Length: 88
Image (cartoon, rainbow, N blue to C red; front, side, top):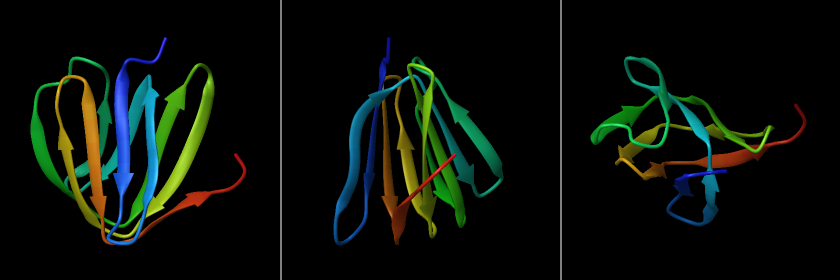
């Protein structure tokens, strides 16, 4: 059961607002995996891929930099640009 709310927002659109099991972010210091209960943090994001796993499926998004705010039950991505990646 998904227990982490993920929101991906750009200046022009909200790409995702969903509950997921795991989020992997392209942090400025390397990849960052976030599970429910993660410690709070704020980090910059480099260009790369966000992966969101939910019930055995994976959604992928390209993000062109930005910031992520992580709390124990939520990840908010504020991206300069972002788009969904089709396929697996």
